Length: 422
Ligand code: GLU
Image 1 (cartoon, rainbow, N blue to C red):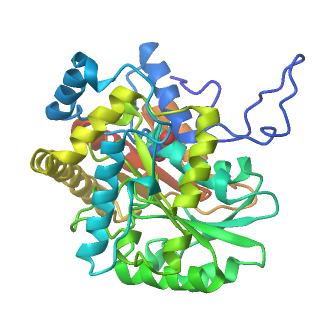
Image 2: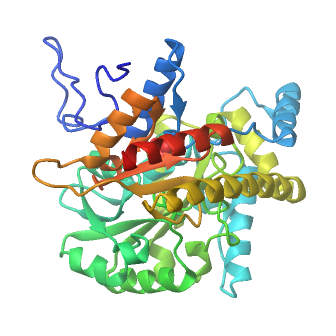
């Protein structure tokens, strides 16, 4: 069975050029999202009748909780909600209020001063847009931005689209590939303008403690770097909620003036298709990002904003729904880890998110991307789609999503083990 024609799992530069089209300088080096390419390929193979197990996509397999769907129905049926019309570019006030209140509560619970206002919040079409807005508004040509690596594939591309330079900073294996201030300092130059943090981390599942985050904040403040903190997986954490940057940065501090936190409803509420994310930033930055968004997409989908509002303002129903999903992710993680450990594979034990990051070889001159080769063979010979580590700038690794149905996860991991030890 040969499923791989052409191989779609490698994030090599996409051949956009044609006899009638020379890609503009803006996108000449652009690579399409490898995470999305893998799931597109898996879907296409399934549609063609191949029984592919898709452990590529980072998309919860649960339905959106009923109370959220119900709120969207109600908004649609109530003409006064305006759910079929434009909203302010930055999103409806009640949603921005709810987001600001949640953020303020995190600060105050940590004994810090809050001060987050609805005007600091911009609601976006998915957290991806919030990250893009921030990269575009904060960084430009000549700037360098530190990306703890492995890091989510789109960080590197978004920084490059802003004409800045992403600098991959590798964390040590004994720290679960997390970076330390010493790692960041070693990679910094006078052109460094900021860094992107992501805890829990996609793809490793590593979670930074409050103390680790505080040390990084201190280092960033000393160098006047921006911190862009992607907290989309924060609620999916197996030892209680992961620490937010908001819980280590006081609202009145210098660091707060250089902090942008992004989050959204996609992962924790199983709302990927609704496309609602947001940024929390100093108000001048929020105004700049709103102006940028006014020329790109305007407001995020109005109906989805009402659904997100329900998710954030019904704490009892929301907590129960999120806790049930996190319990199930944890069950899958534990069962999969047992198989991987029994086979003595090198896997980062994920403390959050829903990915297993497995080392499958040594990168050498003859074999620069063992993860890519492994992923191709796995799809070709065993019908399992995963993301090669090169997508996260770590060619020796592969990423396996366990946000898929439990039986698929177990069967997929069994096939990975069989290929690894064969
Ligand atoms: N963030 C998810 C992933 O890493 C969804 C796909 C994407 O946007 O990258 O798989």
